[in-house]
Image (tube, rainbow, N blue to C red; front, top):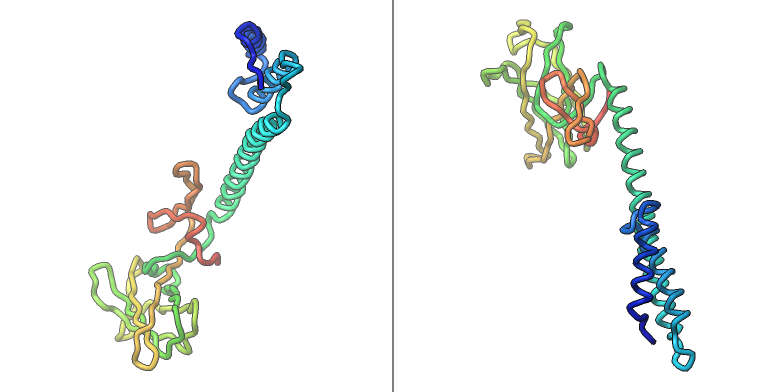
Length: 224
């Protein structure tokens, strides 16, 4: 394939600089425009006795098409991401004031004198014991979950200690011990928390929970 002389290249640079104000030279469209202009110049300047190889032309056109396709794909992905962030923000806002279940062992004893939590079991179990403790770590009550099943199991606490005395409202915690025929079963404590607001961390909406912590939408197990 013959090469383009320096005069033709200089003329192409002048044309490219003159058109710089209309489009970004580093964009796929700008690269494609320069490529087509250079290709036309090469075709005009080729030696009739030694014409350009069709395979080379096809290869060059395929490469420029790939660049254009990649830029279009990037633009589409950015649009999808922006749409996803907007949907997440709207969903997060609708959760304000609602109760959600997330990973955690917090147990809130509210005005009604009751608390609720859940346990996620990784396998079948015939015995699940929930031990409730106060803020100082003292055991105040032991509960059991009847007929536990694989997956999420809910439990309620009436707010009383082991002697039947009502305990003050506030924050407590619990731990879980699960077994099946005497063999320990992996369990994960789940806590209910009210959503008080929404904040954004690095562009991602985060739920502001009543316990002062934040949680992403992906960490929400259930919405009550």
